[in-house]
Length: 190
Image (cartoon, rainbow, N blue to C red; front, side):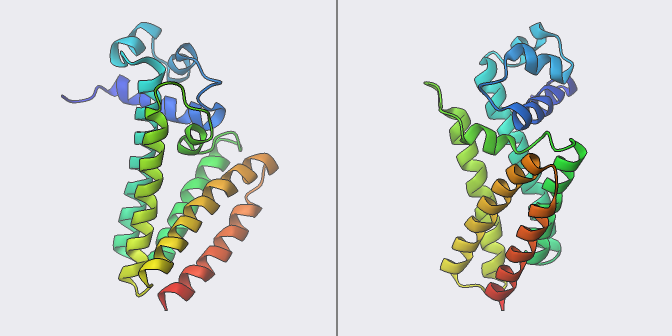
């Protein structure tokens, strides 16, 4: 079944608002308002309520990042993939005037309700990004253990650095992290 444009806008809006405020600080009413949807249509498209919206928003963010990483890693090398990952987050924080971060991280740092499906979706997203980066580094000569360690470091560092950028209202930390990670990737793939 094809997704409606209105539904897709609700998912994108949910991802944006979760990245700004987190899951617990956001109601279904606020999610509907932020995405410009009537509250009734929100419940129509998401009978599972806020939990379903959060899962789909995390999956939306995962798909966006995965597409970016996959395209860049296929066209170039792990350093270019790293740079595209960082540039994506730089654009998000700058375009939002340092108000938005990663909805995947936002869901990850909150205590799950009885239904931990948003947390499982976040774990899946992080795993996907780590695997993409590690596979690319292995394909360019890094040993398997080092590739896995470095890919995990990249994802953890960039996610944490986005939070620092939001707090400091600056991308300096992202630039410094990018330089350090790029050096580590270059060493690993030599």
